Image (cartoon, rainbow, N blue to C red):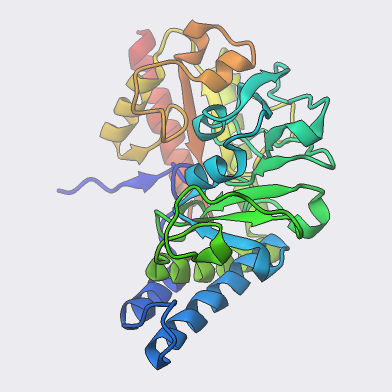
Length: 346
């Protein structure tokens, strides 16, 4: 008998939306290169520009200011390389790689930014879900986790540059975007044929871009329809259930504003990686932190930056829900986790 699986790792990657799958299939049927001037090339170009407009609309930006890249990691490099930007220790490794980690973080994960014009700040943390107050004039902002879950409007944000990844909103993996304030530009790091207005050279990933556009349109509709309010109710049910039965559980960042779907909690003495394996065997996909780092045996750098000890950070588990998650699945997870905890503490 095949064990039924429950996916509770939406912050790592969201399941591919049917709208994105359909758009990608249509793109695969087009033979033209978007840079070609013949009819086939123009058809491919038109599909790409439609997707650019869809992404721009979902982000509250202008289509001309969207630069398609391979994902948020490349976008961070494009926006930050060669600049001396301050960042906080709670940032994703893709940001920490280019910044100077000298911004203060409090116990709830909130960051203080003294000089916004010389800083990069995430809008929401992938591990804890903590949402930041983004200051006006911020140089760069990582919108990867907030996109689709929070109301965002780039043109009104006061941010110079922001970046996102498609697979966080139900688009395909391997495609993302950098958004630029009008009048700003970046130096291309990949050189070649001058695509993407000379900002990111190389033949565009039309299949990925088409899927990205369709996912962006769908996720904007979800947000407008209040879908994430229902997800937040489930997240709260999960936390109240665990808290009632496991009093010593530490819920990280719950005194701050958080993403509606994210819960990270610490059970001291029970390694996060061990919890992940136990839940995997029970049929639940969860994580011990960011998908880019949870495969490594190390404590969460995010929690360490927030002031938690190495031992506490090593005992964290992240559960991230999505619009398809049901209350029955949440309660089944709680039952399985509490049973595993009882066995661990016996």
